[in-house]
Image (cartoon, rainbow over all chains, first blue to last red; front, side, top):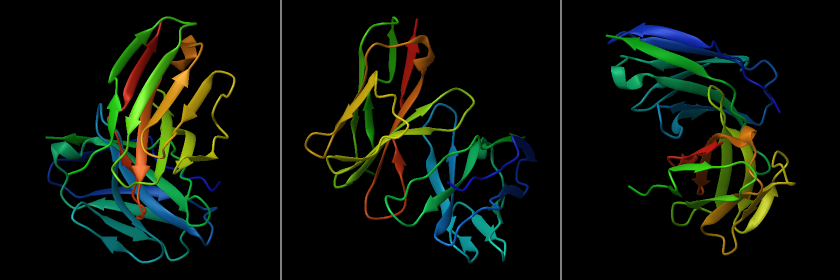
Length: 111
Length: 112
């Protein structure tokens, strides 16, 4: 399985933009890039996903490098409720679409 | 909004005892997952069902863990006998025709 590498932790000031990086140098052509986040004492929740093009939704934006070996999750204005562990995951489009979680990035938002 | 239900939310058991967890996925979701999450780590897939069939159980410790989804709806994960190292959060997730997995709140297991 292709793996992802993320920083263990990051800090952001409230109402500032946050850029969460992810490296996936062994990504294959059939892998989608997904982001999930896990708030304290909850199960993970879907944030966003993409294949090649940058993506936007109500929660965040996803910027994907041209060679697809890295991506960045962008939270445009961090709030205290965004404090969570963010997981960058590769989903194999083929077969049963298995995903493998890494250890993620713990985001701390400072008021 | 439909949610994945799990019970119990918390379970304390002694080692060598049997323990079971239950998951009710979102209605109509054919794919169901059981994950184990050790504190400070990401979720690890234990077993994946497509309807009532197991399609991936490569990380399931089959000597003590079992999982079933008899009618392709709700599912049970069992551990027998429980060991101290099984203390973790057990998460259930389901997926319909889209790409998104929906997770339940999890069951926190403590083995003493």
